[in-house]
Image (tube, rainbow, N blue to C red):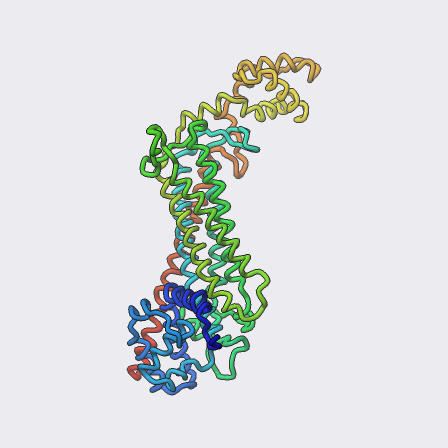
Length: 495
């Protein structure tokens, strides 16, 4: 048996796979790190200007397409060494080797990971903000659309579609706030931590952080290399978002069923059965549901993979973990974008919803409240009386039958006849009245919903402005590297 690295099975199952993943996800970030670090070494007087110039020119002359399609050769353990070998061909092993002064693959790799994940976070934020905008428009169009609200899967009280949708808008806003906080914590540079304890060379970590578009450094060098919570927090945030979305999608699928009939999807998002011509299968929502579940599953897998790893060098573990992080973001993004597309083209069956509200005793809480106000009895007694009336009317519900049963049962329950008029009872049982009197903050009354929509619009505008600033920052940092490199190579940069 040949005792030489790498063993063929290790090459096949680990090194070759990780090499392909690194090319796909990290190549550009790796080259940017090389440039930024070289600029810093020269700026700090750690390597001479002429040698830094050679390194930067060699970096600029690399064939990106050839690197992206290269196959892993046995002499190169990973993409880092493959790129280093290509640079050696341009400016020699001695000069190229000086680029690696005061750094390690540990801090290089974690820096690459953070550089790529921060972009995934921004893409997810953009999708979540866009989905909230779709729901906001839907809410604006349905401020007065009555729907039955459910608890314990049973019809409970009347509300409006806008009230329901604004609850979803609020959880999307919380998702965005979690993602924004995540971005701020991810966008910190570990570069300069080296293997784990920094270096004796006088490097400038904040300069490389600035060149690479970071908003600061991950300060403690041990934690910069060992801590994995920037990934596990990402998994946690994505998991929460997918659970939120999945619960909403589950409702929408029920609403599309013939038994409910509250929602009709556009023909663009349904498929016909291969055997049953009448079918309108809501496949787009079904795909949304499975994508959300898949994103959640991958988030759980990320947490499981990171669990119980030693608090030390995490890079080797992350070689296999990072692709899972990216697939988690990719499927979560697909789910959110697909949901927004489906809902933006859906039609609300308003009359069907209104009928379901009026045909059931969903407003009897307000009738009990009215008895408390007008008859001066306790809510517990009012609740008992109304409950008995509902039971007597049973499935043959109608407002008039409900009022008749209430007045017939009252003398036994209250020990007197009710003073409340038939008109006031009818008003209490009116679903429109039920909604309109719920003017407490967060309630379904139109004024409350309109105010909530305005607040959500303002929050969305703020999120969009934040997103624009962060995107611009990430678009601009590569120009700073190019400009600093050009200045150094032309001799105009300060020594």
